[in-house]
Image 1 (cartoon, rainbow, N blue to C red):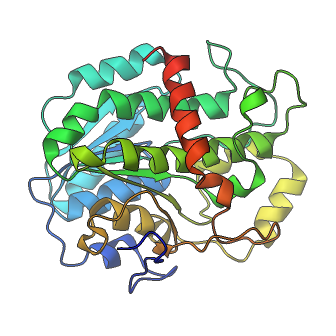
Image 2: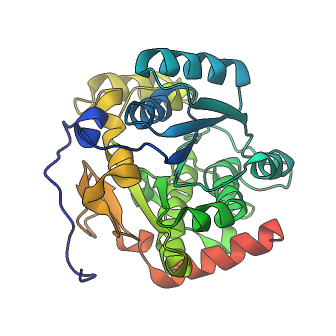
Amino acid sequence: MSDTTRFTTPFTRDSTADDVLAGVDLSGKRAIVTGGASGIGAETARALASAGAEVTLAVRNLAAGEQTAADIREGTGNPKVFVGELELTDRASIDGFVERWDGPLHILVNNAGIMALPELRRSPEGWELQFATNHLGHFQLALGLHDALAAAGGARIVSVSSNAHRMSPVVFDDIDFEHRPYEEWSAYGQSKTANVLFAVEASKRWAGDAITANALMPGGIRTNLQRHQTSAAAQELFDNYDGWKTVEQGASTTVLLAASPLVEGVTGRYFEDNNEAVVTQDPTADHGVRPHALDADAASRLWNLSTELLGL
């Protein structure tokens, strides 16, 4: 398949996760979904479990994760739904999760995230918290699980990004807002661009291990992700937005990339509404992917910088 060929499927923005996985048998496949206790993470986990996969919810809140896992087991009849503790801003927690993992891993869904923190917050290392959580934590997790992914023979990594990537490239000269004024949406956008760049570079570096990696925009879904946006202006914006998806629709592109046979071998791309996004430089466009998120040089630079920051 040519790199210039846009990849499309029969599915649309209105398709649900169950629509995408209809007739797909994931028996014998093992999946990890970060942030699987709620929102589209929980629906992603439920859909994968419904298709027969063994699913581990990687969560901060074990009690919430256990409740979600119990609900999924009961609703799907699949007993192989487990919970693992994972705090993406705690490097020891990530290492512990990796050390506890045993055997091959067929699907890694980097879904967890935080969005548009109104005030600048930093990780224990001093990194801007959205970049640390949304990118660096998942980067460390993926590298730690590399051998498990390689052992699966055809593993897939799914990096949940956002159309907010259009708000900022990775600003390598000042990722952590040490010299420029903090702006919440620029910080979030930078971290979401990083999610795409990770998939772009992983698709190259790990191709020899038969690991594919893709990124996606799930769409607008009312979930706990918006919890930090409490201002009257933000609430008015959300209330007047007419493009909301259901959780079932929001998880569909994730499970398409995680498990559909239609995208077998597809890698290093950015999807929205169950199809590869069009590349656009229009600054006003709500849809499509911006060139800075697919830039090969930026992807390689970010990978090298991330390994350096994490001492990997």
